Image 1 (cartoon, rainbow, N blue to C red):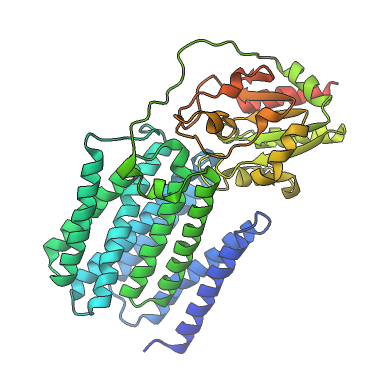
Image 2: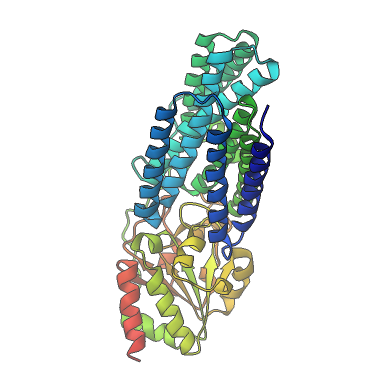
Length: 458
């Protein structure tokens, strides 16, 4: 019998998770949402310790909790903003792997004695948790550029993936009919391989969608493990993550202009990417910081397009200083935020929030796109794919169909880049060679600091 105080505490923790998720939906309240969620998580762990009368292996549990706390604290303090997507991918994978491991252990303890529904939940958790675990690891490797970010298509990959998926399905049914240990480990191995095959064909442009999709997978596996463990709090938390991750995946797919099926079943239809950077030297127009400062100072309206390069350079404070200077000189300035700018959903919002950029200056793509034609200058800082006109015109491009920011419709375009290297999708950007585009080469933070100094001197 679960004590009444424990049931009430679980209800409070569940409410904390719901309130945290609601608060995280807005940059203004996101920090508060994180704190509420942390309190709920701490309460959930504490409830287990104080309500379980027959807690075994306590020293090992405390060591594991201490180890996880230290790793999480150090990661939160040390990981740079540019590495945040990789950390999210790893943490997400750990969640799926943990759900898979717990359900497997429960199966080894109880077998089929808990009934068919519990056995089905166990099989579901093992399959989805394993896919999330290895899929997240591959996503991490792509984001960290430890492997190519382009689609990886194996020889006969489509048939291998279909065969693995069918074998996984057959083994899942077999395990529910004949709950044998060898079948469990076979299913775990097949599911782990399936996770790798699922993510390998995903190109760099689709990585944000995959991150949110795998997040939904982890949530669903945690919810199912909650049923296996008869833990209502796990069931609630997992359902919240699964539902929010699914909705976010749909929104991201819409923002990318892709049907969700192209991500879900990309492994079955993917073809090797032929998109490469052009080796032919093409003329571009470049300028120095003083020329850019003059252009911006005499503009009437400037739209800033931040991207991953801004995060790499940690230049958000310098960008904020430049914007404040321009506003003080009577220039209207806004930020254009593409849903998939950076490496994960909301990456630019979080980055600019670090510099205390007023939320009112941040405009989503649908809101800002019609304003580019009225802008004197569009300043692209470290972005690439999200302003690439190939998404509109080149049907062979891996980003074709993706809605982009209409930076090319501004009177002038300033492109701040380290080099002519293409973006994460590996596609050359025609906007770089447009007559109205001026390039300022160099590290974004250094370039912005020089432009700020030039503006101050005027």
